[in-house]
Length: 297
Image (tube, rainbow, N blue to C red; front, side, top):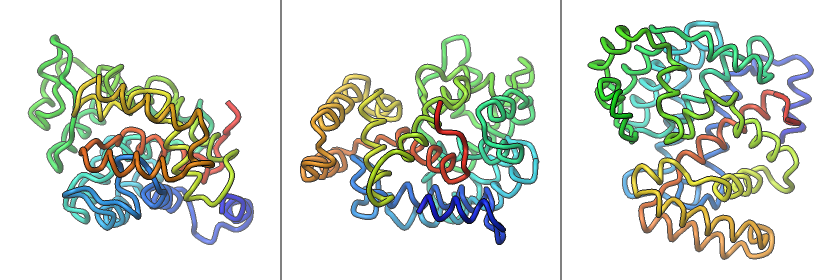
């Protein structure tokens, strides 16, 4: 599939641009299976189902269109979150959008990492204010802020905006406050390091695309504790999940013992453990690969 889309991108695009590829990345991410603990086409969570993610991927369109047109990243993100919530009725892709919106914006000038770094470094206080307003649309699991930044707690939503303006914080600076506790925020300060690595892995993986997605998801989960799991269940549970994923990767279970990965996936769903940050990184990697961004760094 990558190869066919590469050919289409090199020829007449027929109207298939970065926004279409971002929506496709969201759809491909949720379709990959098995992705331990995550909604996929074979597994639903108690109040979050496969069709919710399909609806969310449709609803984000207007916000992504704004980013592709060069409108501010913050307002584009807020619009995408509002559309997601209106269509899906809940939080399906908040973290993914926090990665995809700046990537779509940067794609206007070519999706090399310097373009992405420039896009996030040029965000403003107004972008940060829009980011906080996005929390008015949907409930999002976030970690406790640093003790000296309680007024900037994202869970306060728009009530935190006066503190943002008083401190003159742009959106990148706000997200930097979430590092190291939030690996989506970490991407904003590392030049989208793991997103580009995910794109590289997707390029070199074998097999049908839905298998590549699930395999790369498992590899990412094996490398670092998922920060959404840490927030919801504690660092010890996140470390346990990472260790089990690493054990599966080290023995090549995805290729040689798929049943073991399926069992792990089902167990995490039953325990209510959802490595959603890893899914966000996978979606970002898919977009970078679909968009033809560099994958050799």
